[in-house]
Amino acid sequence: MIKSITSRDGKHRFDIERGRSGLYRYVILDDRYRTDEDFQNPPYWRIEAFSGHYETAEAAEADARAELAWLRE
Image (cartoon, rainbow, N blue to C red; front, side, top):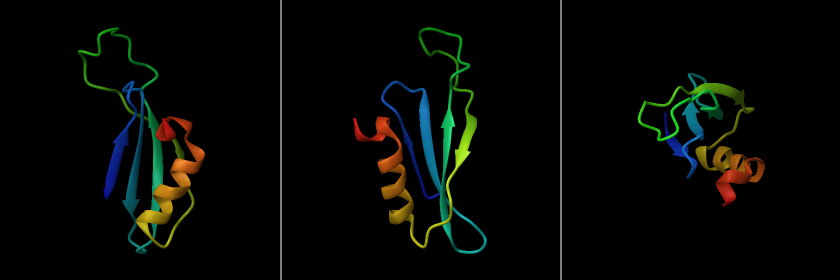
């Protein structure tokens, strides 16, 4: 994993990874199934979506920021 950012509310995350091909992508994860109100248990990250492939990690992050409203908050 190259980079990981978690939302302020702790319910969303995205990771940038580099594949064996040398290209980058981001993975969108969420923790919608957490049941404890005070976040004492570790998150249960569920993959929500994968992006396409990018030449650079910066391009992948820029596209993620354009797509994910919580990253712009």
